[in-house]
Length: 371
Image (cartoon, rainbow, N blue to C red; front, side):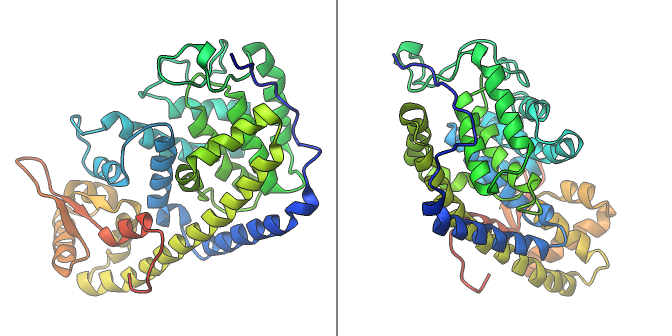
């Protein structure tokens, strides 16, 4: 039987800072380029809304959910009680809602344990694990293992409850000040949180949410929209192996090196995607204005970027436009090819329309110049 993880105080004193300089410099530069693009956006939270949803999808997928980006966007547009993978979709929607709530809470009391508990409560509302004391630090032993297997066959055992108080207080102190380097600080905080596993469920998702929240709180990015779960999902065995090597071999250096590589590669991809979205937004501003010849062209544009799947009633509600005006605009957008029918209407159920150019950018790894 594995022994429980014995928390080591962070920051880690023996990191090879000199050897990390080249990779750390690349990570800092990559994040700075991404943040430069955020500054070019009037409303990055709106423009990058599909990327926020994609991050929620991929982070939840690491935990075993099967919902796709299209599943979630379709459910946003036209909620159905009988939707396939409804529970998985709810987990993704909770993740997104928790991210939205986190920023105002952080502004009131920083990224402290109270804030983490509040975020966790939203994350677990109405989904698997809802009965496992959402928003409360665990008071019993948990462990990671194959479904149905006893603790004796666990893959990893976090610290016992009586060791959590001091370890979490140390993590909170570590987060309360800006350390030698924010990216390394983020790497250490994420790993420590995952290894402490302070809640009975939802630790993985909350731990990954910490990454953009820390980068934002420490001023490295101007909007908490830096997402990294895609890299962790694509390199899941290495992700878990490096976290496991901390508890088994005290190999914090290997984890930090892995994290820096993840930041570099994901920041470059995030920058390409965000740049493509900004280009598309500016292009669509002119195109929608030409197609609709409407004073509501900008409202229409923002509604499409906020939710690239929509129904006519949903569009009316979110834009506040008169029903007749909204329906006319949607008809013009369909005729011009800007919107396409994703799912035909049936009976009283309205058709689901899709702004596929934006969805395509969100899902692709590389882009050509022609969007």
